[in-house]
Amino acid sequence: MAADPLRNLDLNLLPALDALLEERNVTRAAERLGLSQPAVSAALRRLRRHFGDELLVRIGNRYDLSPLAVQLRAASAGALAGVRRVFEAAPAFDPATTTREFSIIASDYSASVLGDHLATLMARAAPHARLRFAAQTHASVDEAPESLRVVDGMVLPHGFLADLPSTPVYTDSWVLLVSADNDEVGARISLERLAEMPWVLTHHAPTAYTPAARQFSMLGFEPEVQVVTENFLPVPYLVAGTRRVALLQRQLAVRLADAAGVRLLPCPWEVTPLKEAFWWHPIYRSDPAHAWLREMMTEAGRLVEQRFRP
Image (tube, rainbow, N blue to C red; front, side, top):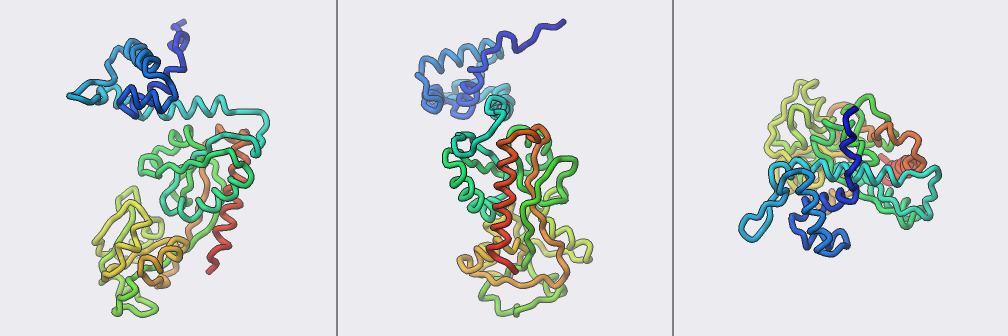
């Protein structure tokens, strides 16, 4: 039988590895870990022996990551999060006393619309817990089964993921945005007129797109794309003061319209509603803390729908 590679491994080295690769500096890593500089220097020496690699390479008056360290950087953060989740597991969960950090992958749209309600609910029920939103990327969605192993879940509309458990959160609709001073457009707009206007689109790529924008091709409508952004919050500001038009989630559009200087218009076609869900890994199915989080997500989603009813 092959020897277990973990038998002689000190898991205390994992936080040190993560801090050193993130900070690229022994002093800053020590401050981050709350340890002395000699202790972190000793950990770096042990890590170098273990990997047979320098990990941090001096270049002039700074350190940079070796090629192996670049690979380890992404893996170390995920491994550390996984270890924390193992040792945070408990047969019972008391939100009033927990100090657990709940991490959620979310777009800037869902973090803005859902985040304030979720944070308020959690602060009342679990005053010592922490809520962390991680930025949603194409990779986190494309590699969701792996991404969800090291976080509590991901807020994402239906239509992107399958074969993973999910909890319904809230339903939103879509509206068109035009500049408040665009006098070429009235209270309504035709599909033919939209085809003549320059567009701001989000996530405009073959495997990354706004869900409602999929319907353009079904309508035989190819927009003239003038600006592409991978975030939703800038969209109203990229429309304001221009002839551009954009499609945005109604909940976010209502919040930003006045500040950005845009008007909301109904879509001249029947748009499928946006059904947001909280996706999570099956390993959390029996976790009482995660079950509580799912309840908080459901309640926060209910508050989202109440805030701006059509």
